[in-house]
Image (cartoon, rainbow, N blue to C red; front, side, top):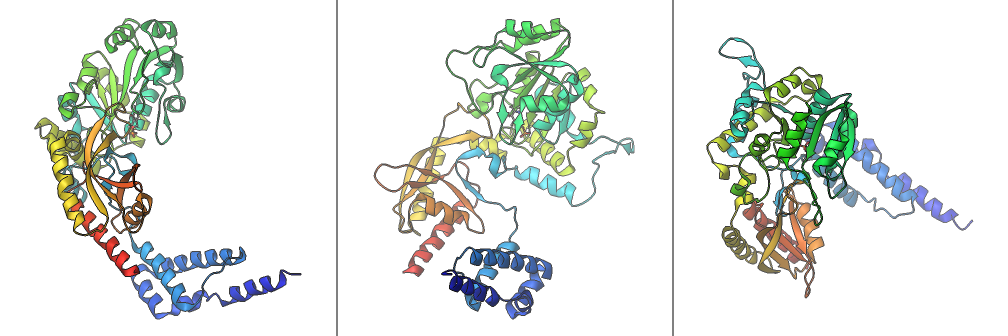
Length: 478
Ligand SMILES: *Cc1c(COP(=O)(O)O)cnc(C)c1O
């Protein structure tokens, strides 16, 4: 009985929700319909009215007077107008950030994309012979030059490359993998799953921390066709560990008439020392040590577009060429254009023209100077405390988890609007969102940390505009 007035209240509120016709007739709403289209505006209104009804039914109080309602709807329309996939500022110091699009393309690669995408191209046309050609031909020679492989192919990504190799080379047979290498790479790429999907059978051997050559020998049966080595890209087992040398695995495989395949993950096209990486094997060295076929990503350490490379012995790579998985995972012309030009930069030794490589190669000195400059700039626009700090960056992208990457950054503390979490949210909500790190500090609120390693040209200006705008909102609210 006592509920009756409440229910009456809700009924009354429900009746006061404006109808769709009324909303679509309004002057302001017509302006939006002209720019977004009537259907999109209707859908945004419809979704919001549904939300309002639900909230009222749950007993919440919703302000339905015309002005606040209009402001809320216009806010939603503005969000609708924005592109969903948008650029942002990466101030996290994680160079190959999978959630943020991994590698940034070189300028030269970008203009090659624009060239082939805005018109026709010889994507699958042989200009010498005047007949149909192969899209793979545009990158195969360069890949062979850079890796020493006899032949090479590209597909959509490295997961696809692994799938194609297993499907074409090992379907219906056993593939031996060390238990220490049965990895899961983020986004549901798991070696056992991809193996099952390809139709190959997984034969595990060894233990998580130690696998010996004898374990591989013991796991080989007459149904085995391949030994597979997988780069433990995103973790590291330390302490009492062992794995056979690649050379010894190759000798074993070849004595038994088997293939040795390696999923190299990131795929270094240069000696790791050029990037300051010790102990990472580059693709050329892999092949030199006897691996028959190696796969790797184009947009991790390589710094190119998303692509999966398969490189190795001609007799092996040729077995993949007509496979339906290759057709299903083929690479588009924009990717090929970007990839070809990225490889040309490698061949010319212009590593710093490739953003991923130049970010990895940055010196402490240059980052500290940039952080100092940025701090001075921010102090001019914010009343918060701004200081230059040493930070911990990361290669990211499931590459080299063990590699400590020291960087420099700017810490922002004692901001009038609050701590790091609040500032991070405000920065994310901008038209050009800014993503920053945070660090626990002993004496004050958590610090917002801007890592300079991953900033792109123009980002400093954007950061200063962002802090300026936040400062105006502080003043406005006073
Ligand atoms: C990253 C990675 C993959 C997946 O590569 P994608 O290009 O993201 O498909 C597969 N294997 C290893 C070892 C990796 O590091």
